[in-house]
Image (cartoon, rainbow, N blue to C red; front, side, top):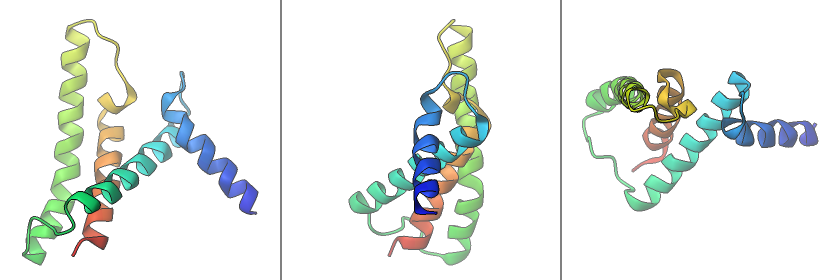
Length: 110
C-alpha cells in the first residue's frame, strides 16, 4: 500500500512538467507545490496578515479565485505575444495552487 501511495505521489509531482499532461496528476502536482509554497511562506511569515476570523474566511474563499483570474490574464498576455504557455496559465491550475497554499497558511499560521 505504501508503495502505491509513493508511486502516485511521484507521478503527481512530475506530471505538471510533462506534455501532454494528465490533468488529474497535473492538478495533484500543483496542489503539492501549493502545499510546499504554503509551508515555506509560514517559515518566512509565521503569522496571518488578517486577524479577524471572518475576514480570514473571506480571504480564503476570494484570494484563490483572484489568483486564478490573474493567472488566466497572464496566460492571455503571453498568448498575445506568441510566447509558450505553461499549465499554470490556466484558471484551474492557478486556483488549485493558490487554494492549497492558502489552506496550509489558514490551518497552520499563528
